[in-house]
Length: 135
Image (cartoon, rainbow, N blue to C red; front, side, top):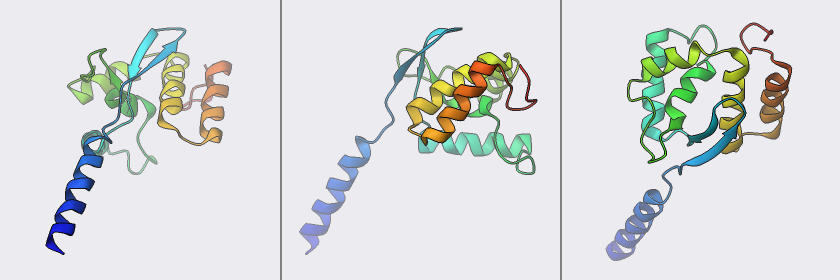
């Protein structure tokens, strides 16, 4: 019985090691090739810290720039922004059309529902900002 439990634990740990989000290259019109990955558990913890510092809980959640700040990678797989707040501020200063383009790429690699992807692509194509409704 104990041996079965040990094997079960070892098997689960091996599966966890293989579940680390991989780096995906996303082609964008504005920035060319951008490397991204789905947020890991550690990234989610970093986002929670940013969420608290931005006090966005009343506003309904994190802005796309925050999610992109943890998702955009260098080609070697290291985070583009080691300082999450700095990355958030840089991405927040980006034009809404470019930010929507990056976020549409993120939605593609995140395997979010087709409806969320279609909405992001429509906004990207129309030049609408998710914050203001205009481009």
